Image 1 (tube, helix red, strand yellow):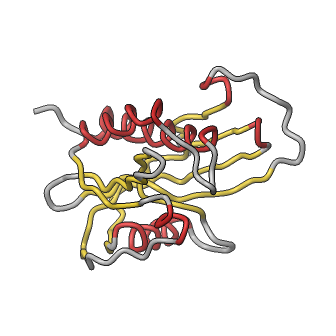
Image 2 (cartoon, rainbow, N blue to C red):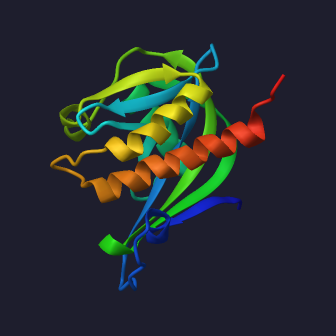
Length: 180
């Protein structure tokens, strides 16, 4: 299984602390393309955050089904998975937390135009954007220095999210996009 990247506290200039029985979580996320080839991005405006579609895998849930569920919830789209890009790990030693995400490439098969956002996502000002790959990379990269905390997550946690999603998009662009 290909590992796209392992993010650690050192990526943010922080010392790595020893993990002691860390909380572990699995996620499913990735790149969803519409018929114009634009990428689905969730913009949480109250945090200045731009992120890919995805979230946690529920107990006994298949990662592919989790990704399809997240696509329907966060961008209102039914999707077909085109490829498994690999995994990306976040090792947040400051919070004793490790997340492994299964990363997919998919395309929209049906747009219901109806989002099913969580209370947290609504409170954080979440809205769906469709951006070309370069603009998606730029927005995610540029937002990292402008992030603000919410009542749900501090900036430390959110920086991992946007850096993770930047590396996913960068990996996709460098390995799947053709420069004609």
